[in-house]
Length: 434
Ligand SMILES: [Zn+2]
Ligand SMILES: [Zn+2]
Image (cartoon, rainbow, N blue to C red; front, side, top):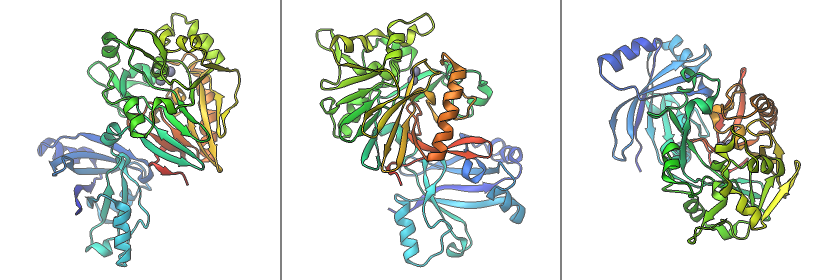
């Protein structure tokens, strides 16, 4: 496939003046703004057309967010103006290899992550007739992440398969606790009922046995529930299992991070006779004892999150295994209690061949919850969340841990990096963890 136009990048020194022209005078719509942390730049997108595959062509106004940003340096040297042109290619690694084989000069010898989960590489202006040219592979873009249900990562000897049980929407204020809407709405756009979209992504770990960690919402809830939480499950865990070449019979172990309905709802199904039974017929279900006690003895504050049909039938069926402390559940997979969201919430630490990954569930439900103060209003013990999160994040940065974000609608997994005094996430594309 031939490269097609994606966007034209314009370095601006005065964003308000640029918007006064492009948006107000020219009538273009500003649809999105995004921070590209690695470049210390904020990109503002204004669509100016559509190409054959339905994607938009944009003007991209580039605003430096730090004095050492490449955009700030560009403006210092050459003034504001056109900075680069971006062409979209189906396979950026192949495009880079093809240019290299012709001896053409590249700025990026290896493709690297760009905005919106894209992969990019810049070609040097000496090769292009003086134009800074960006090649971009748009996958997995946010929309594609929402369509695709299965993302495979290889961690040493273990295969990690991110599944999806669809999406739901929770109150944006509750999701961000004490963080003002003026701040969180820059990260995510609420709907007309102030709800934000969240994914439900259980993780399958394939090693000596096949494990699923959490299982999404399932389909036992009624119309009223589905309306309150804007449940979108047209494509759900059953489809994801099929896409991964698996079925419910393949699962040996179901591991619960905690028993809230968006994690444990998929543990059981209601059969034709109306009876609720375990969904994974061969599996043992592993639950932390303290969490089980809380879920089966709820109080007014947590009652709405613990729906008995999601877990009591497991005890009745004799498939429940309680764990009392941090321990190994199968080779390479262990649990660690991280109190805060609930008193006995646990995360899952995965290790193989010296590489590490973590499934952090509601300790950090999305990438927006990585900064220490961004703690959910849902959390029962927010100060415990703070301590659990700090300890985990420091460890994850030091050990280059691949972190899976169960509820993030667009980022399946990524690495936490320290940038100045902030913790930020660099998304990780599927594939082998190196
Ligand atoms: Zn929860
Ligand atoms: Zn949750």
